[in-house]
Image (cartoon, rainbow over all chains, first blue to last red; front, side, top):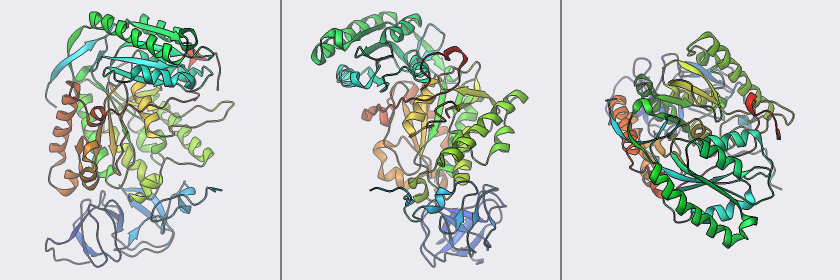
Length: 117
Length: 401
């Protein structure tokens, strides 16, 4: 965690204090400092990879099998351990109900399971 | 939301419209070309139709609700002549509701050109009758039913666009208006939250049954209401998307569950259930695209529909103007021509949520007063009516397909 705020941080928003992810309000590149606002006391963390606007950054260490929490509700399950500052998406988080979404291209979201031949 | 008034059109059933259009309805795909040619170049004419030949009870109910919608002043039904769906009965229902109406079969008219000529002549006659019958009255928030839908959602939709619409809904309900939200297949995982919003114990039971059906539907068809564009925009699971989508419903208690084409019995917040009921053909499909959902909302009498998009969308709607809101400032800049309102300013800190709500309320009032919304001005009139089955006691006979 980084304490100093210098105004150059990339903004993100945590909806609920129980959330272990925040939503990026702008895109961040690897190495950028991300300021997490909302939900609980503001905190800063280092972006461990590029994360686009609207996508989620982990704001705490998340172990494999842990629930990913946003809006104070369980929105998915971590399929591998996730470090604070890492991008949380299809490659490391799966739905509790929707098995199909686990088989999509994690960058474009495109379906891989329908044959086009 | 301050008291505000604009001029509307009074209908025989007491409802008021914010537009006065002539609705052309074709009763089978085979009549669609002629119907669209009849509507071509006619500013006050919108065209919808049902592609199937069999008179699906659900589709008939939907068509009748649209033919007698508050924004519709007159009706022209056009059939080919072979199909089960009967344009004469549609026109009769519209006449009974106080709307000048005509109908004809293209086969009787003598083909494509003769059909178009007959349709154009009917429009001219209907327009004169409609103008003679039109009663203008003052209209206010309490006369308004607003529908809300989201599509092309991204990570901003649940933080800005949908919560903003939720606040507008709270303000509308507090002023005595009606607010309809749907997309129960985007409430997956939220059963307890949904039920906790019920106005009465009976409504709680109805909400529970509606939720369980939506969940069963998704499980059975192995398709949840989340798309590649949603994922690309940062939404990872249906649970996450659901929490964002549900924010459209604001915070007021839910008065009950409406089926497609059903009108709310009293003002307030209502949940529209557009998921098919189980029957011999299994579920079929629920909303296969955003346009279908918007038509369902309009069928409940919504004079205006608000559409929240994160990724961007270029659809509009016939009958009730669509107001497009995005919570993504990048989308707004890229697709300004199509977007009515940027809620992304709330995320950047350029505006507070309260300022954005006031801005959206002003935009709604402007469109109610006659200013076309962006999709309306661009000429978007997309519609999508399909075979579906929903249990309705009054119309249980006929083809169940």
